[in-house]
Picture 1 (spheres, rainbow, N blue to C red):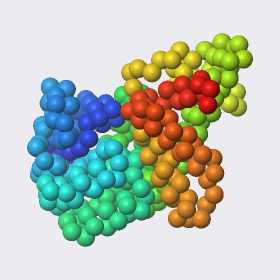
Picture 2 (picture 1 turned 30 degrees about the horizontal axis):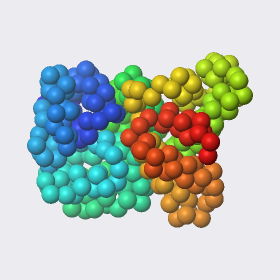
Picture 3 (picture 1 turned 90 degrees about the horizontal axis):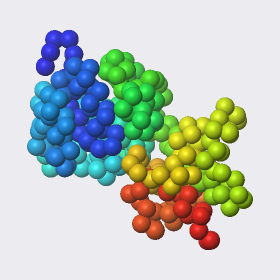
Picture 4 (picture 1 turned 135 degrees about the vertical axis):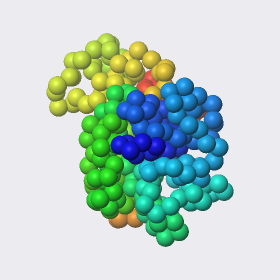
Length: 295
């Protein structure tokens, strides 16, 4: 630990967690890490990070404990399972969760963690993918106490270009659901567009540059359009399973609040169809393959 910088602990060294932790180390923060597959921590250990064997040990000296995990089930296990964060958490520590979870579950877990240990919870899901994580340009949507958001704002400035407090605990997750509804539906229609252009005799690789700056333009178009047109699916920057999980969360949330989300419901079914064909762990750019087939 140092006098000037808070000590950070981080669980989840995956596609997003690795570049995020690298940026924290580069900024000089003392960093302790844990990952279910410990070998993924090796690049961080070379940069000066310290690895622990169980999540509870993350709390030993950390001021802030960060999570970037796959889903609600995994977060619950890392926080409340055997050897979990709850066993080491202390009052005054803050948990910052970058994972994309169900809003209701986030609120329930936050209340339980604070009641049992005094540790508070801030949900802070991110948007921007691995390029944003590497460049430190993520959009971070936060839910939690205003003072907790301000406490970590200087730290998160090394990870994102924008941090917005959306409301109390869980509000960040609701906002991320909205984000993912737009991204997933966009990805599906971009796949339709590329496949249609190809079948109609147009060079699909020209679609994204041709539409740049117009009303149809978007980051997903500029990223996914060329990848789909070139059938360039490696390296994997994100997963079909992630978009499916978030669309399913959107559908459940809409039911809880009696809100109609027909496009996202259809998108979930199309994403599930694509995933069921062995594509869950592949990049969403592979969605174009579904439209290239004669369904």
